[in-house]
Figure (cartoon, rainbow over the protein chains, first blue to last red):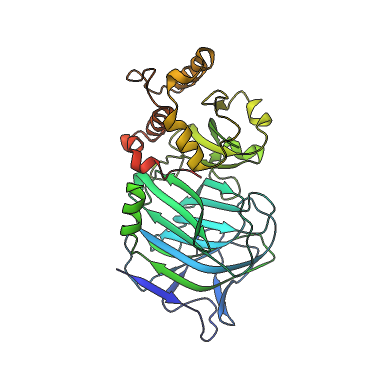
Length: 200
Length: 151
């Protein structure tokens, strides 16, 4: 069982380092740790980072407080990653992002070697600094992806792909005016939740 | 209001133009079942899409998108639990004959096997079978799996 909490309250890092690895895939720029929060090094590129100093089960959760200035929607925003493969240059992961667009401001996208597939788009207003959680449960052929805002389920979809394993982390999808992530929690203790869902 | 469509998969797989349901073109909230190949490309040309909107005029006017239940979903089905309850409690035989023919025609168009279906088959089973057909696996036939499968 892995449970990691990171409040990012430490010296600045550019790029984010230590227990984290930043993505270097096509279209990706680094995340930085600046004044005790995580920010994209440039808001004109995407960013990803995963917690690489732990072993993660396939059923996993990524949770953090998200702040973003931007109303573009359509898959832009700040967010969370799941099942990020341990290769920095390969954009392979599940990605949830949100911004403040009036409609369709939240999206789940699957990336496999940079190939993107939009699985879910929904509208959910939120206050900056609100706590979002993104969960993946189940085998690659039937992975249930669920989004929570403040502990309340706000979106869910099932996927069938080759994306079975990896690590949880952070995401930024350009373009936005600014964005930050704080107080992150990663966990792979989801078995009991999954079984409750199956029985429900 | 929630409705269920089968839509073409559009897009080129880039971040700016991801593979997605054509339902997004109309600005709806939606969840779609998108089976991929190992390289991430779309493994199927169509996708079961659960869309939420107050106005489905645009998608209904698009001949490439098929309303699975042929307008048989009432306007008071607004959430996943409501859709779940409705489809579980309504059978193929409950649908008026003309609209039933339209539903079955959609299944046939997408080569969804329905030889084991009858008038007492719940509509929920139709949706499961469409997913399992698009997934190329019987995984979608599991009631427990599918209950957690859409927005």
